[in-house]
Amino acid sequence: MNILIADTMYSSLFNMFEEHDWQYSYQPAYKRQDIIDALPQYDGLVIRSKTFVDAEVLEAGHNLKFIARAGAGLDLIDLTEAQNRNIEVFHAGEGNRDAVAEQAVGMLLALFNNIIRADRQVRQGIWDREGNRGVEIMNKTVGIIGYGNNGSATAKRLSGFGCKVLAYDKCRDRYGDAYARQSTIEEIMEEADILSLHIPLTAETKFMVNDSFVEGFAKPFYLLNLSRGETAQIGSIVKGLQSGKIKGACLDVLENEKLSKLTPDQQQAFDYLCSVDNVVLTPHIGGWTHESYHRINEVLVRQIAEWALVKE
Image 1 (cartoon, rainbow, N blue to C red):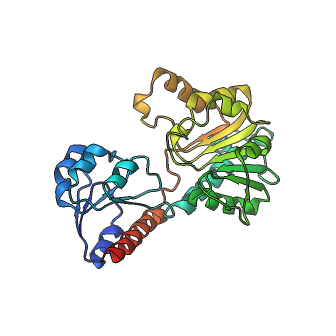
Image 2: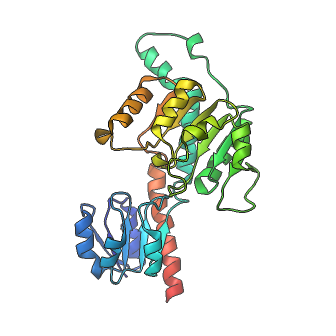
Image 3: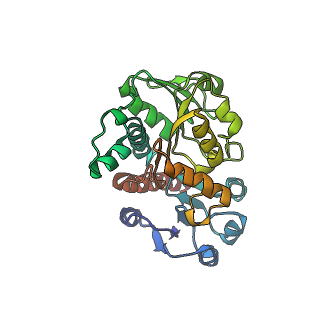
């Protein structure tokens, strides 16, 4: 097997490939056209986030047998086109699930206990205990939409906080477990104090969180998004915060993460998010730990090896 690695990868991947006697070319600086030009000579392509693998790219892969995405989401790959060309697609959804779950809990704790604001105030010589009185997760009802690797790992972490967890996943059957009760969207919207999104970006989920979705909740709620930014309209989040329907938000992802290229409306909404204390923002680092970086490689290599064994 000859594999093109067209994005920056943690170095443990190379040793793993060599242990399997897989040939590879590591080209993290390759841009889209470079990948297209080089792809005809490779059996496999490893990517992360910088290139959309669409029909044009796949057309160049005359000998391409698989694509491996070093991450959970597959929205950067035209899955229909890959399937039509009998190209296997691997991803490392389980590789960063623990990191995502810990990030979700960490952001929620930071929001509920005013940790970011309190830290900033103490550094300025302000000792305000009453103004930073916190909220407990205990006895809250958490709704999780998307109960795959990340959603289920988050529910497991939250189970130790004494809260009730409701989970909905349209792609699975009989997925309720010791950490969450299988529920409907309607039940979550009726009962949830906290909503956590762990869904892929698809045509159906794009801007799922909009004005009507937010207003459809029976009571004010906290929003966590550690999935994909375009699942939630930034303007609708701001409207919800301003009206009080969204009590606070933890956003690891944004509708547009290229902050230098925001539209005027996006910029206005982003400026608001940055100006209030009931929002915690991080730069898409859920799942971005030293441990997960290595674990993602392990998951991808295991999947490729299992597939190659069947093909022999």
